Length: 93
Length: 441
Image (cartoon, rainbow over all chains, first blue to last red; front, side, top):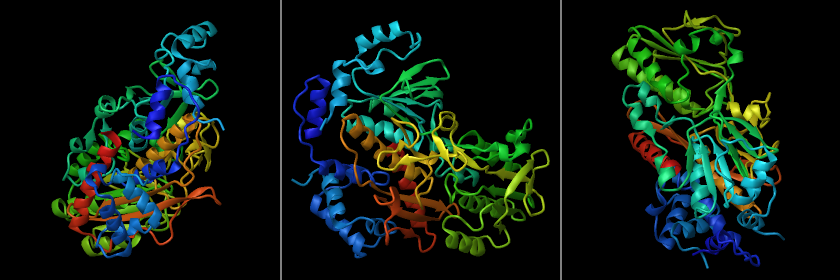
């Protein structure tokens, strides 16, 4: 369970407490990856490293595509990494 | 720092007017006398977000508010329509190759799977002071945050003849997929061979920039097979094709020579619906066998009524693109076609779906007392059929630019199809199925 989910559960039970430090990055990966799910079911993608490599290949043009080469160029490598992490269900540590 | 206090306050009943916990609120509110009998239940313990409008933007926001809060936020979707009818792909109905039923979906998964409360009613008034929404059926809803996703409505005042009795039943727009789509198809079926189908395009901004040109292609595809002596006349208020211009012009020249005639700078200023005549500024009247008038557009009615539409002659709603919060009304967020869009941001289904998620993320952060995502980053892709078998696309990536406080396209990203293809037509269909699922399921 994510820190956020834990917190939300606590909030739902009415248990207040000191603020939990909440890193922005997991949410940012989630937010950016949400840009993908208009076209791709999120469970369609899997494998963090393979997915990241695929995205980089689209971006470089090594992997032929109709749309993805155009969209991937709008994201820097760090952003593609965060998206791959999120979609593969394994957020970066 | 005061993180996440709002959830907690709402949860334990710290009494701040309508934000109090259920039991306290019921008593205090009844005593204060400003909630009528039909107010929707008592105040919930969970924060409540009301979403007005169940199109691509509003439905997506409703779903993701539930999903990303692990169902901890109550979401009420106010949408009067019994079904969701997809505008994307609806031009295929006009070509006679697709039934509208295949583009018609339900809201039941949002309710059953995600726990969205769907009220089949129409929002008539927003009271931002008391944070409540009035519905046509008499219900009042209080909210912690309100999302307004009303889509577009038409500026009929610019077309006086369209207010005459019967005019809007005979001269159709078919720009909101549904009954008008099938009615326009019937008009095309009844049109004699050798007839003229005229489509008029309003000035930008309007919903779905490439849509009218796609429609011209698909109607032409139907006519060349069924009524080959007929003609498609495009009356465009804009000075050039507003989307995918080179591709559409190439298609018209190669696939529909002598069938499609494009007239830029032709703005319809009035209509004689009985004669099916469009009156133009600076040009001669045009009379057609089927006149398909796409009127000038503005944000949906509810946005105009409560001061959300602030710009461009009060037609569109300005928002902070970090949060989609209205620049005019606190705690009210606006998204989708109703926005005063950022530069190069189209009014499209895909974009509204992306807005829905970015807005849901921001609303959840704000309910948590957190700062919103400082770098929204999302994309658009849009397919257009050029005949029943082949399609083209345009794609773009949009990133928040802090200096200019708006979304701008990322340099070097995006692009167009090199040419129409059957592969892209298949992609258009898979795009549609997935975005329907992402929005509604």
